[in-house]
Image (cartoon, rainbow, N blue to C red; front, side):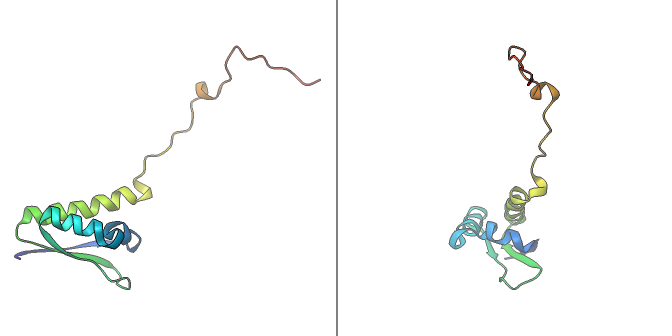
Length: 100
C-alpha cells in the first residue's frame, strides 16, 4: 500500500469511530477500500493509521473518521437561540386576574 496517513483523534471520540465490536471502523474500511488500525486504549495521543492503494480512498477514510468526530463534538452543535419577546408574551385573549 503506497499511501499511508495517521489521523489524530481525541481519546473520547475513539469509541464512536470504532463502534460496537468494530462495526463502524470496519464499515469505513470496507467502503473506502482501506486498511485501518485503531489505537490501543492506553495510546495517547490516539492515532488511527490508514493505508490505501489510492490517495482518493485514503482521503475518503480520513474524512469519514473526522466526520464522526465532528458529529459527536459538542462544540460543533448548533447554538440554541434565546426565545424572542414575541414567543414569551402571553396571548391577548387570556385574562389576567390580580390577587387582592
